[in-house]
Image (cartoon, rainbow, N blue to C red):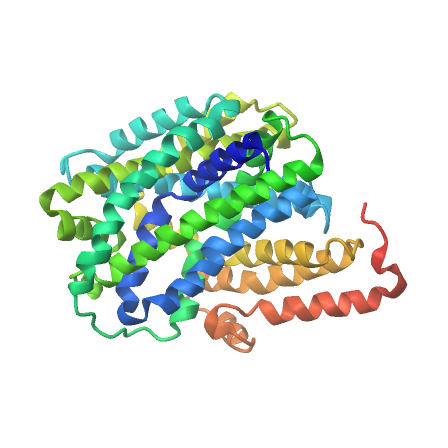
Length: 433
């Protein structure tokens, strides 16, 4: 591998890590470690599947399918691809992930230092900076990979490394959570990195093209290796945060995600630790918010065929995010859960089916039918959240295998794909449109 390619992989990988590592990525791992204590490694394994492996597979799937998530979704149906893309962008953009970034900056970075700070002004300043930094789409991967990512990793090391030694002195209580692996698997949804990965892949591919990697095989190699580098960084950081949370000297029943991070910092660094967490949260949220804003605006520009320009998209996305960010982190997570339980399984099924069978099964029908079945089953959890007093929805869900682990969609998706393939017979390899 030549030096130029190695350098490109390095800065794109660092940029991708900075894109992925946002508010949820800082808050969730430590909180799960606190909840599972002595068995944190089991939860970490489940969490890694949906928060590390699945996002990397999302990058792979888009890279081998074309340049955009719609190229991946076209394996099933072009119109469905745009619908799923829109839902994904709304989730990782102005409805959930972006507002959560602004709310996290206020609750974790600013409020502990300036208790009287008003959330509306903090969010306005934060998203103002995001808006300004997102105006130049071409410069985003370079700025994130060469400037923000190294600084972010440095401060994460400052937080985690001392805790690896000092935390060993803490006697851990036993965990009280059952099904620890599946708790981690399910909570990995909350990072929303699979959804974000489909959009970040577009920025990564564009970054590789700007470095003159226009040949398909070269571009895929650069993007895939950059994704693996980002995954390695996430594995180390998440493991460290899980460990810190498991060894935190605080009652798990009487704390939330934000308060835990503040406690961990003060546990190991005294009163000055709060400033470390403040810097970390601002950096993590800023880098992710810039990438999400750019990716969302770029999608809306393509969706409207340029009627909504990129700059107008950036402004619109940030304005909506300011309004929703005032809800607060816990408020955003509460309404996000049902939507994520719907879109995550559908996205995972699309990614895995294309990666595993995309080269040998060209017909659209198995992918399309499997996605429809997955969508119908996943929508049951949305209905349960919308109508909590209606017991019939929960009864239907309980009849499905693996529902106890929030994996009720797995067996139906597998069986539907297999049956669809057998039903097609000789038409299995008919090229999709």
